[in-house]
Amino acid sequence: MAKDVIIALDFPTREETLAFLDLFPAGEKPFVKIGMELYYAQGPDIVREMKARGHRIFLDLKLHDIPNTVKRAMSVLSKLDADMVNLHAAGASEMMRAALEGLTRPDGTRPLLIAVTQLTSTDAGALKHELLIDTPMAEAVLSYAQNAARCGLDGVVCSPLEAALVKERCGAAFCTVTPGIRFAGGDAGDQKRIMTPERAGKSGCDYIVMGRPITQAPDPVEAYRRAVREFAG
Ligand code: C5P
Image (cartoon, rainbow, N blue to C red; front, side, top):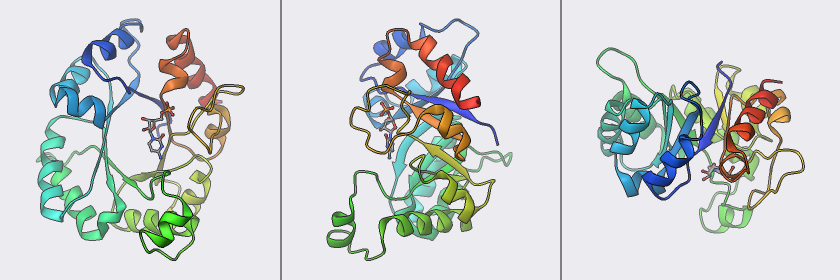
């Protein structure tokens, strides 16, 4: 399994995104995450542009709709040549299988398809009283992950603290993409359940997603290289 650091490009505009990426020397092309903010502001051209610049892309749009709609939307996304896309496992098996079908290109290749289990913003109270799920959070997350694995998805987005358990339940090849990463002694910001790149590397995380610790660092390129170094151990 390829282990890598993915930089979350949480910028509102193309100009700010390019100004950030231009800090890197021409031969250094980090794996980047494009989320809803940037995608909805700039449209699919921002994905094409990042690909043309040589970046691998995690397109973090978290699809969740009826199977046919998700299948057709995934088919459009596969043509953008993203390397990783995601959906909500809450859409259930039929939707996840349809997504895989839509994502698979005529030559049989496709981006990695990753499931979101429960949003980290959903707490135990919301799970029980609003979503009406009586299962404890950790079990609900693992059960959603197993369902995604059974449907043929490639992995889940999860907390670095859950990565080892996900591997245990879903198999070593099932990949874990983990935000909530902070350098030792760094500012946690709004992330509550955090881990350092070094610990994440030893805890079953395949990809770590880092935004502010890199994008807001005094020297973002050095912060990125530090993350890569520490994650690789
Ligand atoms: O700046 P920071 O390192 O906290 O950025 C983490 C990135 O991962 C953000 O783009 C955030 O939206 C995303 N993310 C997260 N927690 C999740 C899922 C996604 O922080 N559970």
